[in-house]
Structures are given as C-alpha cells and as structure tokens.
Length: 405
Length: 101
Image 1 (cartoon, each protein chain N blue to C red):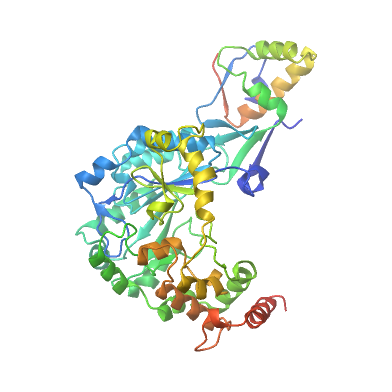
Image 2 (tube, chains in turn brown, orange):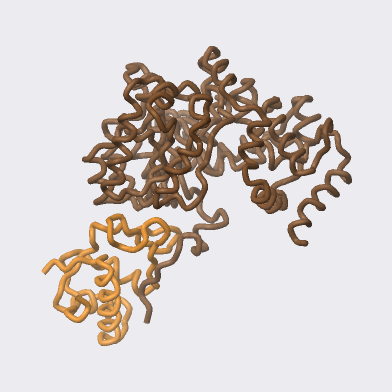
C-alpha cells in the first residue's frame, strides 16, 4: 500500500481553481528602505521614527501569518521598503516557515549577512530570493539608489548568497543610468543557476502609491521609458513576442464594460506595513482597504465571528469588486476598449496617477496602443475603443488563428 | 533505516517538516534542506496514514499506537501493525519521523 504521495503543488486539486480562500499573501514589512531609489513608488527614509513606530509589531505580523495559514496559504512574500531592515525579520521568517509557508523575499540584497545565509541554508525559503539589480557598476547603481557604497554592499550580498548556494533570481529596473548595461546584466544573469528564463525589466514606473510626493512623481514620470522604447524592449525577439501575445490574446482580450475590477485584485491580498489589507500591492485608495487591527475589526463588525483577514477576503473585497464605473471618460474609452489584455489600466494605476479608481491613464493607453499597432490589431491613428465590435473581433480572430496555421 | 524499524520504537514527527491539515487533507511540508524538492513539492498521506500520523507523540511505541487504533477502529491488530510499520517506513526513509528511544 502507498501511504505517502508527493506531488507538484500544481497537481493538487485543492490548490487550484479557487477552492481555498487564500493561496498566497504579500506582506510589506516596512516602507522604510536603506536605499533612496530615484524611481521608487513607496520608500520612506531608513530611520524615519514616525513610520517605524506605526509599523506592525512582531505579534501583529505573526497573527496575520497565522490567519493566512488557517485560510490555506502556502506562501508569503515579504517585501517593503527593504524587509531586511526589520530587526525581527529572522523571527518572522522562521515563524512563517514553521507554519509550512514558503517565503519569497524581495530584497535589494545589500543587507544580506552571513548569519542570514546560514539561516537560509538550514531552513531554505522554499522559493528563490528575488533581487532587483540597479546597475552593474558603482557609478550607475549608486546614482540610482542615491547612496554611495550601495553597489559594494549589493555585491557583497550576492557573493554571500552564491557562497552558501542560496537560490536567488534577479530582475532589473531600467533607467537612463543603466540602460547601456543590459548586455552586461544579461551576461551576469546567464551565470546564475536559477535563472532559467529571461530576466524581467521594470521600466514603466509607478507613481507614489500613497500619493505623498508630487515632486518625486515628476521625477518618476521623467524616468519612464516612452511607449516606443517599451515596445522596443518587449520586441527584442519579435517572433517570440508575437507568439506569446497570440497565446495571451486568446485568453485575455476584450473590453471590461463598466466593471472596475477585471483583474485579480482582492482575490488575494497585500498587507501593508501598518496592518491594512489591500486588494493588491499598489491599491491604497481608502475606500478599498481593510484594517486588520482586531479592535478596529470588532468595532466595525461586532457581530461577525470571522477573523479580520477572512472578513476582508470573503466579505469586504468582494463588495468592492462589484463596483462599477460612473466616469464618462472611462465608460467611453476603457470600458469599450478591446485592448484590455495589453493595457495595465486598473484601479490601482488610476489611484496613483489621478487619485480616483477609474480615470484613464494616458501613458498606459499609449503603451497598449503601441503594442496593438505592432501586433496589427489597430492601424495608425485608430483608437481601439472607437472600433466597431465586428471589426476588432475579426482582427483579433485573425491574429489568434495565425498561431494555428 | 527501514530494515531496523520495529514495534518497540517510539517516533515523533521531525522538526524539519510541518504537518498541515487544509480542508481535511493532510499535507506534509518540508522546511529543512535535504527533504524533497521544497520549491515545488508537497507530500500528502492516505486516510490510514493521516490517522496514524496524529498518534506520534514521542511517548507511545508503535505497538501502543497499533493497539490503540485496533481498539478505536475495531480492526485486527495484525493488520493495523502492518499499516503502522508500512507508514513509518515510508516517513522514516524521508527523514520525516525521528526515533526518540
């Protein structure tokens, strides 16, 4: 008789198709960071006493992790800010692992120590550590993170991880300071045993997620690559891009109507540094978030027996997801636009850019149209939302069916 | 290790794994290096294994566990002993159980 079976996670029926309330949780352990990246959407100063005092304490984070595990969660992403700034990081890491959750650590690697590597060797995270690379030289790296000596610290962290054989993955933020270093970065990536795929590049940077710094927003806008440059990056291997997009288009194109949430926001959650459950990592509009503080939860819903996280996921977020747009601009454009799958327009982006949930974001619209023109879905000068349904459906079908021929 | 397992031994679940019950299904999650492919794999037990696993308390011998289960489920002792030994063999070879005596 076979008493034990081992299977890949994706082979379990239990972990597919929304059978569990929560499969994964993101937790922002802090918004503080030891770097001060010129393009960052969230960072607060490393030693900011106000932000530090407001952060979830150790017990609060453990309570969130426990609630997530009770709901079935198999993994947690610790992100920030720089999560390794938390003095209780190791304690939280061990706690999460002992709940049977895999840990995905998002870090800049500058605070990786020998002690941490020994911990990761003894109790592996279960997922590769995810590291953003800001440059391949001190001149570019330190300029982007606005801190002298950061590049050396980063390499020290990378070297330690390699010495201890701790799996990690890298991605790059593409900025004017490091744009010429792509070949060097990719040569480095090719030496990494866990990078079986092409590295990701972030280049269409988010504005400040708390809408707290208009001066920095102006800088971020100036650092974004243009729609044409975005397209050039995406289509460095044009055949591959088209092939991928054909598969993608067969599933994700079409217009969202007046629905605000055609994405997966609220099906999982990101808990911010202060214990507020968000529908995704970016959306911080006050009408869409749920405080997990037990007293606040009890006061808002004295009759419920549900714990705060379960309440947020099963009661609060589903209500928010039902919201419909009443903004004529959105209804006339995004709601009728069939480029949904090519466009990053969503309530979170609208919030960051305009402080609303449903204002079209011009920059994202231009990128989506640039992609669609490249793929032959629209012609020069056409706006996707102006096309008759039978026209765009025919073009889409032609595009998709080319993959079958 | 498998050949040495006998009913006088006492076992406890290793601290290198976490046992979780999710929606009635028993999942064994490796958390230490050297047990399975931690990134992609989970272990699950059949119904018999699930019942046996909850009995490992580091105090009762395998014989005690088998006897308990035989009474609890009104099943022949020899059959239960075979299941307990079979289950322990599978777990022990994966370092998921630790012998404490």
